[in-house]
Length: 247
Image (cartoon, rainbow, N blue to C red; front, side, top):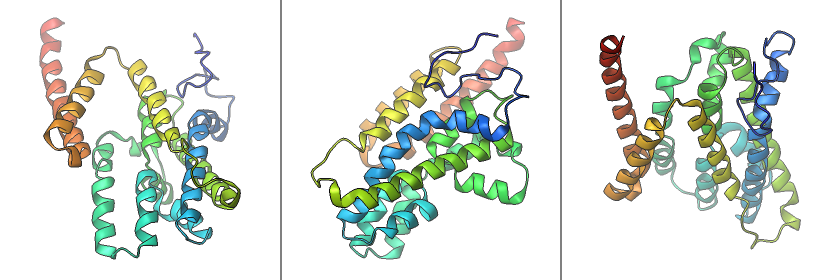
């Protein structure tokens, strides 16, 4: 078996047999490249919490109980301005609506135990989803998935606490910390494309995003995700019908 030498690949196979490496260690190896991107983003969140005039311990509250990166950045401003709770709930629904589509293909059946399943659903972030659906199925067991989510959560919390603690020494006009999320998604997208046999799915995704942008920029994400899932379903049935004829 050829081992992928790429140091930042989330699908790199370290132990081909997956028998000599403990599951917690395999999860740590898989989550570390993603965690490198989550820590600076968590630092940016912690700095924002303090700069908005909130107590630093709010960074721990946001990252522990909300745990939804983009929503947390929005929630900081809402809490600081005492936004009504119904408006916060509506915003959370719109921002995280994409998780409805994640549930269609997330392999939750691999996770055993009610508590583990509950946490796996709670900790289903974009990064955790990408790792679970693009990683090697033989090595990405239920325990590895949950351990990976625990590590990612720890990276996020640790970064936010570090940012909130060091906020007094970080200039308010610093820029670029939030770009870590964009760079992280670029890496995850490259890994997802490499896992595909062709470029049909990435092309469909880009086309849906551009079309949704032109149709309604304010609601681009749910429109793009809805169209993408619909086209994938159509593609699945078309491919399934062609398969017997080609056999």
